[in-house]
Length: 342
Image (cartoon, rainbow, N blue to C red):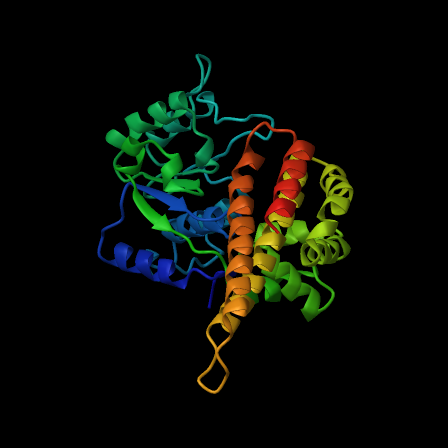
């Protein structure tokens, strides 16, 4: 079901409905889950519902027409504070939270008396990038929160937060969107020309709508087919390396280069899974099938080990994308090792 146009999070909607009805809203929440699945939008819509002057908050159905709803949707409500990491920064600057000598940050604003609503709400996007200084500044507010105020931290993993911050927040785990939801949205928004194209993009999106849209802007069909052909004939893997490098380096930004690299890894994981399922199916014949002889069983075990090694290697490579490594060197090392295993 859809909640105010947001798909895939019905159980969390019900969780907040019950909490509001029972008067059990916490002062701080940590929303975690894959990027691009609507966590920040969820917090925004929740704030809009809590601020609505016409409909009861527990309905989570803002009217959209009252003063508060209009101001929230326009991004000008004085009691809704939103802050995120600047695009040109690698960490979350503490100044965004506490300000400088000339003006206060959002934490000071959060402590002020509400101007129009019954409470103030702060949404901190990109919470994964809080550095020790900004995290400690936030911790002081979490330890002594302003009366009625609510803080929503938006991240991808609870493990990326200080234990002291985690312990002072209710953690809400958001799941990836189902592939059928992503495919449907791609078609509705015009990012896919056919059901087949939408399904292919959705399968590579990891349940992230934002990522699906990014993938839709790339020409990926030919490179994906070429990778699968190289994996099917491992002796051809090294000859695929120049094409893989060109695909990654022909990016408009570092973020896009990471996305392209991650696609290569995930297509490989998909292919490994297909081969393993095939091997396991042959290793567990039905009661009416003949049991494979010893040589065939040995061959299957060797192939299974090879594809498991390829799977593990590819999983190990993905974290390097977030580090300051040369992508061409990373791809070369990955493909050379793949060829050795396969």
